[in-house]
Length: 313
Image (cartoon, rainbow, N blue to C red):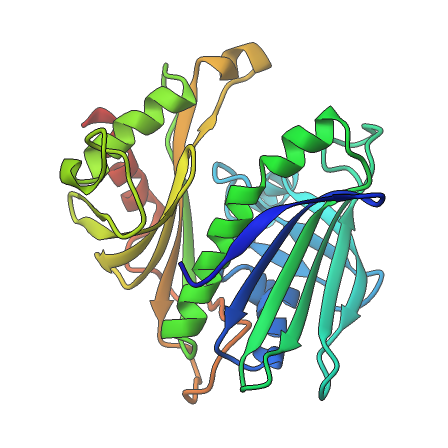
């Protein structure tokens, strides 16, 4: 969907995910979407950054962590699972020159663990017709077993996130985005077991083989939540919502436990909502930095209740 391409590139410089997507807005808008905190927060994960080479980028990817904007204690707790990187390139597009944003995360496996830095870059070029092409690369300088497991395992996630970005910039480019993260407590199931149950609850049996196996374009509905499956991977999917709000929803199951052994047999369900809202002060022009401080229609507690109903189903 949206012509997102994603794969793995292996060369002398290591192993990286490479994704590309055409977008129907000018390069400066796309650059704002991938190189500002408000932009990244509107399609990926909550993010704060210093827009300059040498600046810090902090991303809060843990769906169970508290909202870091609610106070010092919440921010300190959220930082325990945040990823921190250093911006290595910050070149906005100018004329026919492409824009480039890049950063390196040195402690992505934990502080002091001796691994190569994980490097992510976004290049934004003009398509010559008023739109843009975004190319994202993400990985590190190694091609061993760790690279195969880590880099290859991130392909579906990047593809799904870029679908979220492409949907808004294609259909609602002038809207702001209010985001919500919610997660359940762990349950005594493996990730595949939990995901199979969720799929059976959410996706109409007639939509795909196996009675609950989702596919692009399938109808998904449970309770007050409904939409269309935009993408699906092994234990995640993105929905284009029609209810209870207009926007996109990423849903995923993940291993959850106090220890590695615990996590092998326990899983949790989480979501990240991107609700389209009127941008305060918006004038109808396309927004790249689209995350806005607007109360969502459903808060995290209500979304968590919906997740729990999917599991209890």
